[in-house]
Image: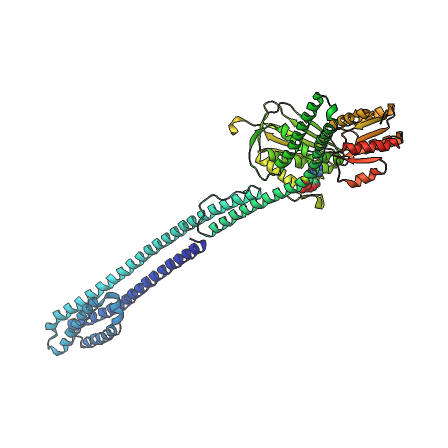
Length: 466
Length: 122
Ligand SMILES: Nc1ncnc2c1ncn2[C@@H]1O[C@H](COP(=O)(O)OP(=O)(O)OP(=O)(O)O)[C@@H](O)[C@H]1O
Ligand SMILES: [Mg+2]
């Protein structure tokens, strides 16, 4: 369900429950009001009854003739009142009770009216008194009952309202908790993935994608991640192709020498064939073969380098990977008038690496070093390993112009370059990514005008990695 | 034919020197081969050579420097430059004026022979 729908439903439920409470309260208050109204009427009626009974007593005890008149007046007044408030009274006590009340009232009225026609009041006394008494008792009784009912209704409503309140609060809290816990869970997942993506590892959210807005966001994040991954792959590959252009020019020159050697041997072989001793002929042919091998190696290096992402990790010797990479930049060194010195420690333990990627690292670092130097510069490449260490270190050091301190934090960023249109600024960011994938580290030390050293640490291969 | 002429070949690819030697010695040239420019220049100080064939790019000293040194010390020595940079015509032009000739790899030995002959027979 979509979050909007959940919110709408949540709000609708809240409104409905508030409306229910309101209707209930309205109804209860109406009821209370009716009852109170009745009690009010009943009180007046009872007071008037009391007066009538008093007059009745005066009549029978003291023969006060005017008392009968007073009773009659009261009876008329009350009769009118009962008729005019009939509706209210029925509403409160029900028709049955009303009829009974009316019955008792009429009965009493009849008895009083009889007094006038009957000659001796004494014969009437008992009947009148009984009727008055019955009326009074009934009236007082229902008044008391109604009062009780009012109290009951009030306390019942209080309870009901309290329950309502508790239920509403509880469901609100529960719903909010459920809603927000899911919301935060989704947000956390998205946040985690977004962070990973910003660090350059293009993860995806591997969860069941829900059918709400978060699902849409997750899908968007996933496709963004995929797109970024594709873009990065493209960038990496295009940087590689750019490097390949430079390298190929150099490598073509590297091929020039063995080709020339083969050519010269073949020419000599042809022109001097008759005069050549057998051993020389054999030597020539063998040299041709080894020169052809040399060509194959150079071409192979180039092919390896140009391969798109291989992602094949293998056990390898770091020194030989470094030597092969160096063949690719060898000519660049020549052209730039830069000498190089290798200090590769023998008997390095094996490493578990993607050879092509590490080759790319070395080529990028050496290219940067060469580009930072003017003729006469020196490039040093060193490998080191101390027994029981977990890492082999590779150092690529130059005597170039160095890196400004303020740039040191940026050089590994994609597109950071001080070379203008000459550089893509991708070299070091690619290096960084590759070293990270190898669980290695890369550091840089640089001094303006003195030179720069890149230090890479690659984990030594241990059996359990397999 | 080229009897008695002293030729020096400098190239860090040993096969180049070896082949020059193999091709020129039967014609009566005296050929000395060097893999590095430094000992070659030292040798040139000791003895006069009629012609030097040198590579343009070498590990220790640049071929251009070799050319300049030779032309300064003994201007009559002929110098032929060899390079694998067939495309780098800017640098080629720069020294072409000074060098007596220029060859791009792969070297055509017959042409080289003809060139040497022409330069020395003058
Ligand atoms: N050895 C070095 N000496 C001096 N500065 C360096 C060195 N290596 C890198 N830098 C600086 O770091 C920046 C980023 O290097 P990076 O290899 O990422 O890009 P780039 O070399 O400019 O471009 P590209 O690699 O595409 O040629 C360079 O522009 C340069 O300023
Ligand atoms: Mg670079």
